[in-house]
Length: 293
Image 1 (cartoon, rainbow, N blue to C red):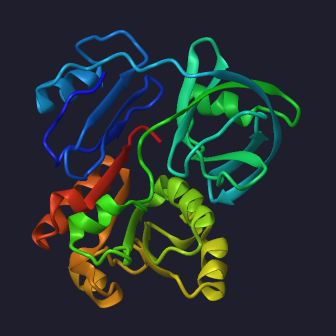
Image 2 (image 1 turned 30 degrees about the vertical axis):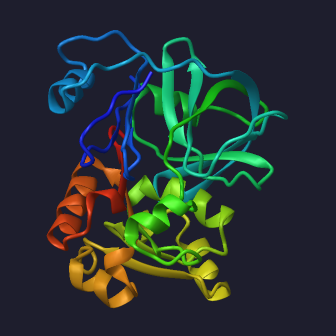
C-alpha cells in the first residue's frame, strides 16, 4: 500500500531497527515506509509520522536466502567490504538494499555495493563497536547468514519521465549528479558499475582520504571513462565542503541535472538545503539517509 507525501521528503535509514522511507522525486512522488520493529515512543518512525503526517506501514516481506560469506577485505580505514554468494534467482536494481540476519535479533539493512552484473553480493560498512558490527566482524569465510530482499525504490533515472521533468529533448538524458557523504558511496558504486554509458558526475565527501571507500577504484574509473567525473572533498584535511560553486563549475547544464544525495542525516539535509538555494526543483532531487552507520 502506498501513500502520497510532499516532494521534499527523503529516505531515512535507522540503525538495526529498520526504517526506510523513499521519495521518488518525480511527478506524482510517492512515499514508501517499512518498519521491522514494534513502535514505541523512542522509535524513529514516530518522528517520520509526525513530520510527514502519514501512517507508517509494515514493510512487505520479501524472499529469504541462505548465503555464505566468500571473502572480506578492507575498503578504507575502519571500513570493510563483505562478499557473499549471490543466490541463483536473486535479482535487484542498482541502488537497492538487503536486510542481513546474523541471528534472530541481529538484523541490519545494507545497500548493495556490487552491481547486478557482478557475480557476488557485496556490502560495505563502517566497523563501529556495536553488537551487530562485532558479530559481523567475527564472520569467517564459509559462514552462513540469511538475507532478505531486495528492497528500495532508489535507482538511476533512465526513463522518459526524467527527460520530460527537466525539459530535455526526447533523446537526451539529463545529467546525473551524485552527492555522496562517506559510506553513502555504496549504492553509487553499484550504479556506476551498472551504467557506464551514463553521464555522471560524483562529488564524494569524506573527512580524510583514508576514510574514502573505493577511492582508488573510482579514480581508475574516471581515467578509463569519458562519461564519469570524480570530485573529492576531504573536510578535515582541506577544510572544503561541497558547495554551489563547485557544482556549477563541474556540471554542464547543472540546472537540469538529476541530483542524488546519499549519506548521514546531516549530510543529506545540507545537500538538500544547498540544492534548494540553487533553485533546483524538488522533482530533480532523490535522497537516501543513512543513520547509525
